[in-house]
Image 1 (spheres, one colour):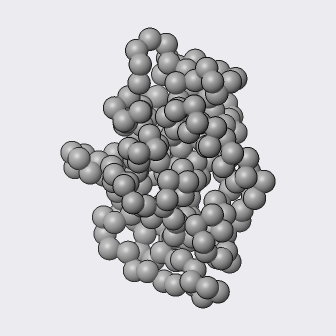
Image 2 (cartoon, rainbow, N blue to C red):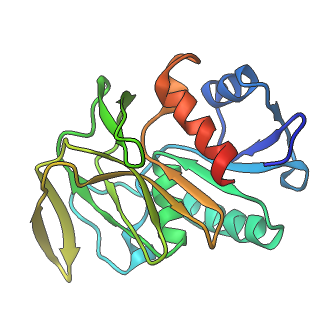
Length: 210
């Protein structure tokens, strides 16, 4: 990330994302071409058809948003812009980079906090989690943070729901794809205070990786 005032283009933005970036000294811009970072945001589930699965009964998709954001991802790629995603945004980027998702997991769709572990340092921090899907890394993904919350994860094979027992410490929370310059971050730093470890970690990763 180059020095000076940093500029972000936020896709499907809201006041929380804007406040978070402005509070961190960033400028929010209206054109992707002007941005140093393209930020994808939270929302509906990513369509499993993008990673060749049928829909789980709990999956709620927005195919119009999927199509729009797939196009924007391709534009960002053509412009050589680094991309980052939060919650759905992180899961979407994971899929665009060749990963997939567990379509339903337990113990993550919470409005409280749980502990996330920095893989590199072993440091633990509280994070806010609202997702019921979870990233499954694709080829070339670098695992940066994990959690120990889910006990059951569900995927779909054909029309059959498959159950995967999850071991402690295997919940994928943060991934980085060097080839795509993409940061995939499942927790919600925009829900946390500016001084929170979660926000600090998010912006540290943006500075280091992107």
